[in-house]
Image 1 (tube, rainbow, N blue to C red):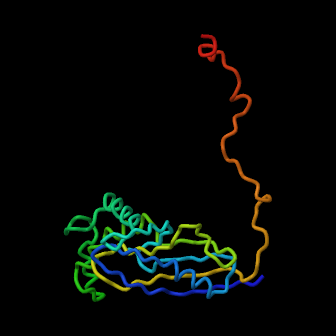
Image 2: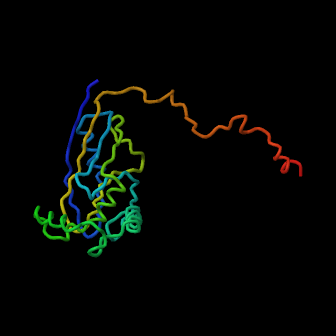
Image 3: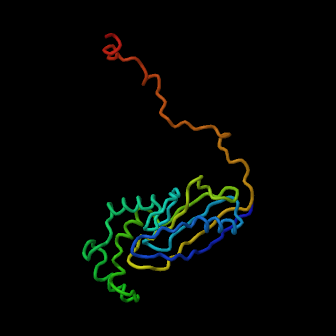
Amino acid sequence: MEFKIFQKELELQSRGWIPTFHDVTKEINEIVAASGVKNGTVIVASHHTTCSVMIQECSHDIDSFDLEYLQHDLLDIMRKMIPDFAEEGQYRHPGPIHAQYGRYVDEPGNFTSMNTDGHLRSVFFGRSESITIKDGLLDTGEFAHVYFIDWDHVRARRRQLNVTVIGTPDDIGDRKWNNGEVINTLHKFTPEEKAYDEHFDLQLKR
C-alpha cells in the first residue's frame, strides 16, 4: 500500500476590530483532492497562538457583523468567559518585558500585545483539528464546515493555516467493525442488581 504526505499553506486576511471566522472548507477539500489521498487524515493547524481551528455546523444566516449566527452566539459566550481586552491592566499579560520584546521585533506599537483575550480563547479551542478522509472526501457529516478563527482583533493582519494530508491513494476495503454490529454501551443490570428487596413491600403491598 502506497503512503503519501502532502502539505500546503493557506494565506488568510483577518480584518481586526472583531474576531474573524474564515470558512476554509472549500480550500481544504481542494487540497485533499490535489493530494491524491483517498483514505487517510488531514490535519488543519494554525500557525498562530491567538487563532483556532473549529469544525462546526454552517449556520447560513449572516448578521451585520459578517458573522454567521452560530459564530456570533459562540463569540458572545466567549466574551462572557474571557472578556474582550478593553483597557490597560485588565489582564496580567502583557507585562513590561513582553511589551519591550514587541518593540524589539518591530511591532507597530504596544497595543499589538493587548491580545490576551485571543490567547486565552485559543487555549480553550485548540489550534488544530484532524479530519478523516474516506474515499477522497472529508468525513465531516452533512452540515459541518471547517473554520479558522482569528481571535486577535487588535488589528487587521495576514494569517497562515497549515494543512497536512497523510494517507494512501489506495482503496482500503470494508470499514465495518464486526460486520457493522451496533455497540450497546448502556449499563446492563445484573440479576443481583435486579433482585427482590423486602423494602419493596412498602410499595407493592399497599
